Image (tube, rainbow, N blue to C red; front, side, top):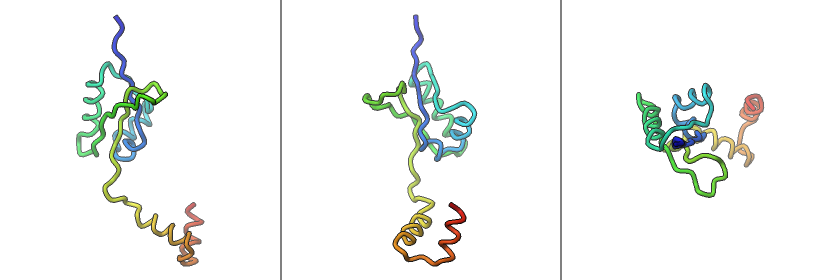
Length: 109
C-alpha cells in the first residue's frame, strides 16, 4: 500500500520572517515531503518555536501547476522596517534629494 505524500514548498515570506526557515532552506532546499498535512503542520509549529516569527502551512491553490500540496508561509511585518529607504527612493525619483545622497546610493547599488 503506497504511503501518502504531502509536498510543501517554502515561500520567500517564510524565509524572510523566520531565521530557522532560512537556515533550513540553505541546508536542505525549499521542497519538503511529509507523510501527511498534520506532520507538515507540526513541522511548521516547530520552526515557529523558540521566539522565531510564526510560519504556517497554507494549502496550494487548485490551479497551481507545481507538485506542491501546500506552502510554508509567513506574514509580512506590520510596519515595514525599510519604509524610510522607500520614501528616500521616491524623493530621489521626484528629484527632491541632495547630491551627496545620490552619490551614496550609486555606490551602494
